[in-house]
Length: 223
View 1: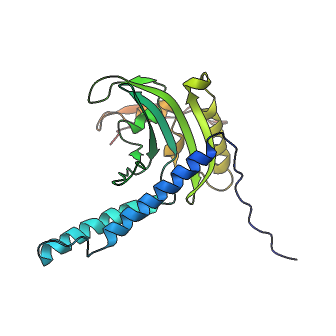
View 2: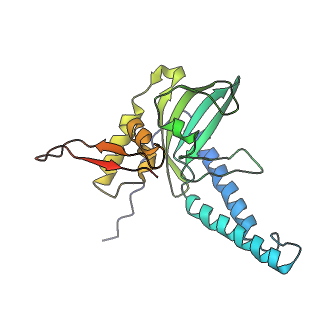
View 3: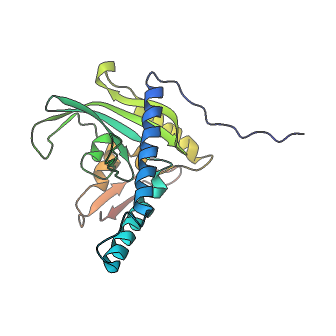
């Protein structure tokens, strides 16, 4: 009896799936180019041997930090409008600056990255003015491949889509089967707020009651 072929993850249709898949491919290619540049010791040569070694070591460290994220560059995006200009920001676990193109990634733990998790629709950028969230989108990526696109909020579609709850339930179901993925992809607004308290601030976090057990609470010191 022939061995059964492995099941491929189901891909969900979305009007902009192909556009997002193309952007993902571009981001992966940009990251690989940057890693190749960092790993090329001849390009990282200084005026003398000691400087060259230091520069090469630093470049190697940058390459090592970025390499694990090539297979999963980001997990979400924000369409924002600031000062009359509209742009899309991609949110991942590791920030990346594409020096030769538009495939940048902002870190989830940055000030801008935190907007992916909140319910707020406006914010004040550091340079002043006013920023508006026009869309929040979850992007399910695995092994450099886009599997699913889920809009969480879209002002052109009436606002909140209910997609955040849908994504969370999907992740919880994964947790009971093949192992739950990184929690930063599905942080809820209250969890995000608790995680971002200043370092050294005592925070009481209370969870829901488990079956047959009283509610639990503990004090945590962020940072």
